[in-house]
Image (cartoon, rainbow, N blue to C red; front, top):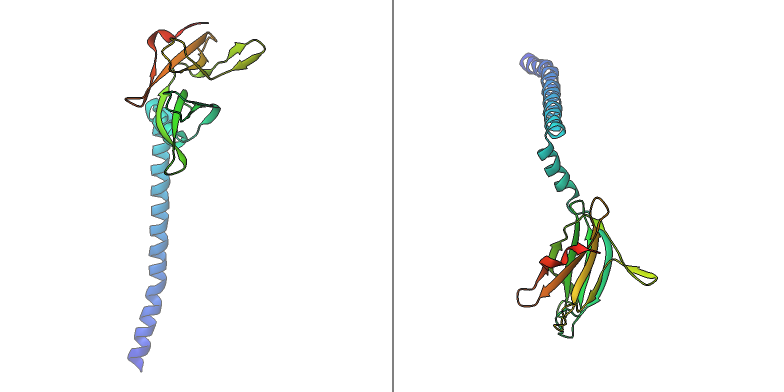
Length: 178
């Protein structure tokens, strides 16, 4: 009986030491994690390239839809959906085609416009920031997406849809003054 009692007493004495050891390990882990977090945040704060990469990773999915338009760009009888969106990187034209098997729009291509600020084109009393027209009389519609520069200088972006490559192509001569 004495041995049992002695073993029991020895176990009860070692238990508080284990708790004290666990508490010290938790404190070390907490302070190490806090120190590493401080170093990481300091690196981000003082390194512009790293700051941009972190910002891009966090805000990559955020965008604002500026306007949408439906038009048959390749005279196939099926309209394409053109969406002009603004992200933190700039303004994009996204092109979608309706997939009848899945009954939903499928993204075909995306094109970044040259200027980060949305513009508009005025027709009489009305204005629009995205429209289609056949500029070169080839029977296919071109996408017209007005933008403006940092100094508020207006530009018209003329974009062609190439049905063979299924890509949007910015017409090089299309960046001209209004």
